[in-house]
Length: 277
Image (cartoon, rainbow, N blue to C red; front, top):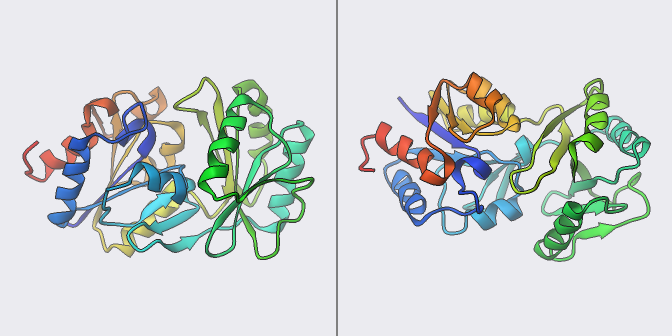
């Protein structure tokens, strides 16, 4: 049976310092050499995803930004992406404005990502701005208004790092908004939470189903740890939670393995395929 193994990155495949071990890198290389379909599904973009996967060859396209993009890292090629339509985009902006919050808006021109925002609300958002501005070669702009994006730029994604109590009222209003999906979950690396908004056609679940057909796989095996992984785990043929996963993920998982810092994902795949651990 042709299986597609697809894993979340932060808190699942990556160690707690956001790195891969040499052991993991070697095993992933071995998977590819043996024709095992292996890839990732993450909230990271092609920029930050590419950084943590440097030196790693994936044997299937990656799912990025919670399903906004399906991306081939080997060819630097976008296979598909989902943009937010005009009316939902404007309504999301109004909800953030109502709560005096300043999200980042990611836009895509068919080749490159850009980010715009009208202000910085938290230290985490300042860190995000400082690091991503460098990574994006300056394509991170502070602007006066997000009503109109630059020519040829389509909105694909909002994000905002902040304390949970600041973001919760926004998330509650987004529940009733058509045309969008969102993810709301604790951040791996700070005490805050992350709110991400994207088109209703985008989700890790939809992207996993697309990738299963695209790769002609007969079975999907998904690995995760956080709330934004639940849609993917719910549609996978088999769902696997690392032991450090949040309780809600463990509750729906078919299998629970060791924690992320123990290289548990690659050990599971190796054992299942008769590869020496």
